[in-house]
Image 1 (cartoon, rainbow, N blue to C red):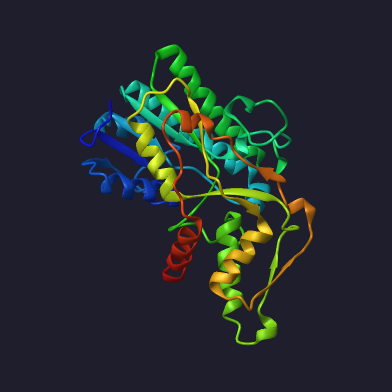
Image 2: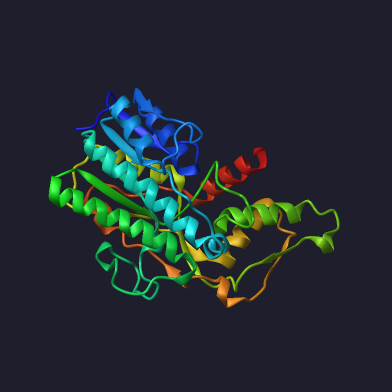
Length: 312
């Protein structure tokens, strides 16, 4: 089984999730962590990936590398989202098996589940209904990764799993206003409005109605889940990773505003098409039965994230 002396390749180590996983593993004493810049290794290139894993011979592979983005990015670049993610995960999963990798963890997101489900959503509800149109390409790619892992586990008795987190937030997030997820977008927009010296100009205009509910998890909690399941053999190849925090977009906006500048006024454009799924709450009872549960202090984690953004 995997321990602190095992060779572990963290793919996507410069992203929000990958950098957090790397940080948590180092804190817990892991000695042989392998990383490589995407400029030196294109994970979409099958031959290069196979050659790299053959040379490095990791005992475990963590796939935190992916093409990700918010609603607008998913709508504008569906071809990129499906092809890039299919190539990255397929190359890493197949090359891991060929090079006798003992443990593999693939990360996805809660958008893999159908949009009209009774909540909270459990792992058995995958492929039980229609996907949300705005992020269908990303979801289809991740579902393919899940099914690929299931197939390898069934046919080759591998010990590979998929961890499906809810919306993640934290240090090193993407704050591009066209391509980011909702929480980093809220932080940046509200921060920029707070810098307006004219009090009447401190207005933030946000997409959608503000009514959809979202569950969020501090990225370090997801990284801790990753470290926990690295060392554990599970019967399930798909495990939800979430938290007890679920609020409306409007409530998150007000929470961010109160930390950055309570004088900022928030207005939504009321475009229902930009709302996405009305609610995405994960059932994390399977993770709990396996021994893992989030211990996030939301207020402190949000404050830490905002401070990191200001220093960015």
